[in-house]
Length: 267
Ligand SMILES: C[S@@+](CC[C@H](N)C(=O)[O-])C[C@H]1O[C@@H](n2cnc3c(N)ncnc32)[C@H](O)[C@@H]1O
Image (cartoon, rainbow, N blue to C red):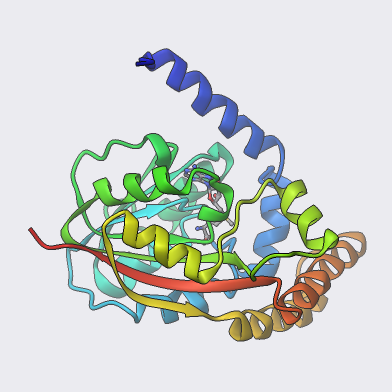
């Protein structure tokens, strides 16, 4: 058996973090994404979509939530504000976490949220959570069975997993879509593929919805909003092109978007 020493793990973590911070999530890329998605968010629909997804669960004050791939901390801050949740956010990007720390302090919510640099695949929680929440993060993670095992060990028995993610339609895929996934280094599942993975990891699947139609509406709204967003003309043109391509791929049924709620068996 191959034993992994802690420093080897730390080197892998640092390398993966550096790749994200120097690639898709440089401070400048984050600024542009946020200008389109909305304050504190780097995922479709910003705070409005976050609230809709939260409504799939019953919340109670003091619930312990782990936000996986917390980004700028938008969901964590909203969960603390709306429901009195205690949220621990983990992320692989140091750029994201530095911003999350600033924003929680500005919002006066530093007592309710905490941040940690970690890769979910290797994460060993201090305590199990009532809810594991994640928005549009798992697309980055290729080893889905390991991911779901990690999510399971972060939850208390009876706890809930609530997430959204980019999905793909059934193969074969066009050359354009295949290139998009390769260039982004994404790993996307079909809706049915995710359900099978969740079930084999021991989750009970409560909600598995293909929300591609809503995704297209969100993208169109964001495309319209770019006109007044704080972006240079060159940035606006590049983002508008990228959003238009996403809309076309979603309308063709290749790129999809799903929302899931699953439960760890009680006891
Ligand atoms: C599209 S952003 C979404 C951020 C946030 N969830 C939101 O809704 O605004 C994806 C996030 O996942 C993080 N991420 C990617 N791989 C990760 C991993 N293995 N462990 C933890 N975070 C990861 C990225 O650094 C990034 O912040």
